[in-house]
Amino acid sequence: MIKKGNPGDGFLLCFLLNLLFNFWWGAIATLLLIFSFVFRISIIWSFIGYFVWISVAFLGTALILWATGVGNEPTPVRPNLNPYSAKNSDVFPTVPNESVEDVPVSKNDEGVNEDAGDSIDNVEESDSREPVE
Image (cartoon, rainbow, N blue to C red):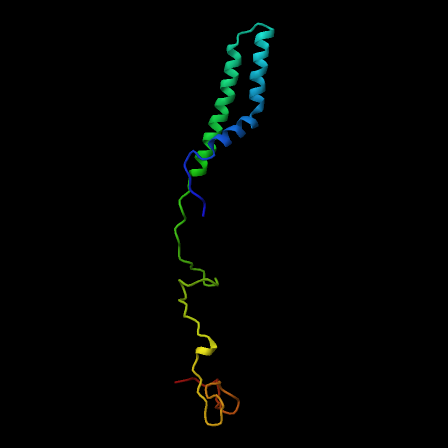
């Protein structure tokens, strides 16, 4: 079972990884900061670059964490209707298994099991082609 936690679990780690994966946005913002001092352009472009970099990482993190919670309801148990399935207790009810030691076996006076099954000597001859009435 999946451990349930708070909705904010892992947000900071995921956000930092998104900042790392979107490194080039930050590199462009840093380049704009350097250009603002060297070429005397407005520093506001650098701040816009940093804002876009952090905003994209934040929205990506929020999307990832939202997607982990969608459809997280447990699947309801449905009966197994496959007749070829080995675990099909809904279609064929199971009977508790009796072990060999639990089956009563009676012995006759000679010490031979009476319930040992049909042997060749005590099977009646019958023609299986005749219809049974």
